[in-house]
Image 1: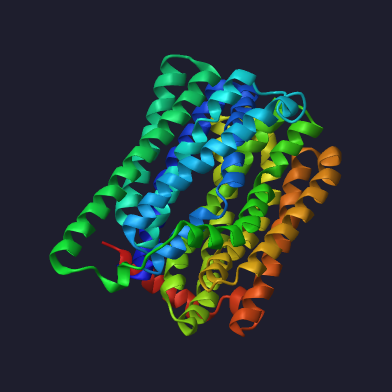
Image 2: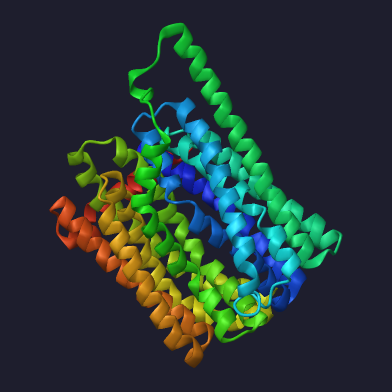
Amino acid sequence: MTFAGRVAGVLGTRLVQLACTLAVSFLLARLLGPDGRGVYTLLVLVPTTLFALGQLGLTSAMVFNAGRGGRLADLERHTLTLGLGVSVVVVAAALTVLPALEPTALRLAPPDLLRIALLALPLRLVATLAGSVLYGRHMFRAYNLILAVQSVLSVVLVVVLVGLLGSGVDGALAAYLLFLAFGTVAVVLYLDGVRRAEDRVAAATGPSAEADVPVSAREIAGYGLRLYPATVGTFFGYRADVFLLAWLLGSASDIGVYAVAVSLAELVFNVPDAVSTVLFPRIAAASRTEADRLAPAMARMTILVTAAAAVAVVPAAWIALSVLLPAFLPGMAALIVILPGIVALSVAKVLTSYLSGIERLAPVTTAAVASLGVNLGANLVLIPAFGIVGAAAASLVSYTAYAVLMIKFASDASSCSWRDFLVPQTGDVRRLASSIVRLRP
């Protein structure tokens, strides 16, 4: 597959996930109402936060080592041992800390459901590590299919458990856990099948020098830990606003409205996510000259498509909320405020793949941690004054700061001007149109 073909395949999968995520989001909003939707958001946010804290940069390390030709048997073994081992430690720590958080930031979430939600951590971590190996080996089609089927299943589970059985927030959480369990089993079984197939080929013809580099757990952890502060900083830069809204406002309804608004705005992330997913293993395996050439071009192309998507989201979101979820219309102002920041952040996502692929991890960490500091400070000032719109404005400020820093670091690494990363050129439009034409059936 060409680079554009791989991006299109990942983007197509993201669009399926997008459609299913929207369906789930609207179904839960309709069936649970603003209060129930807010409680569910907090329940899911807890294991998501633990994942960000506990993944230790291992997902990026798996992509990097798989892209560099790491031995598949080693990577599969480390996926299971590291994924399950880290999960046990993090869940144990969470069970110790939860009683202290339940009277404050988590006071809106039922304690028993909070503990059940922790089951999501090992499922998500193992699945993500296994999927990272597949992406690093450029096995996009198979993993994309698993993700697409998993997304469709999520809609079915919500319809059955929440819609037909009327099980409320409990059923929504059960649907979430079953959705994760399916994906974990499917991707682990597929990775094991690929490893067995490679072992049979190696036994018959000898191992491939390009895909038989031994990989130790120490190497994976070493790369991951260097990137870990960046991944944690990036996550909390995305999600600290929900915790602060729960703490400062204490309104499940406001969190529910804000969650729907942000989920609609973040639809735009599908473009940079698809590009960075394919770009990272490509950069890891490329020469430095090719990497320096790819990064500015991919950043400019991403801006073009992401900006167009952001413009389209505003009227589409307004119509969808007006027709289907009028109780969530107050979130439109927050959506409009945060969208320019998401366009800026799309550049940072692509440049993170570039700098991580050439092992310039310190600048990635610096930008992510600095952006988180800006985000926390802005939220503490703006949420009490402007509520959910203040939270969106804080994200706009921090996302823009993150993008500025990443452009500076990428410019220094590649010896390219900041304009090379930020200002689309006439040729970019032609190349984008040509790629779309080539991808047509």
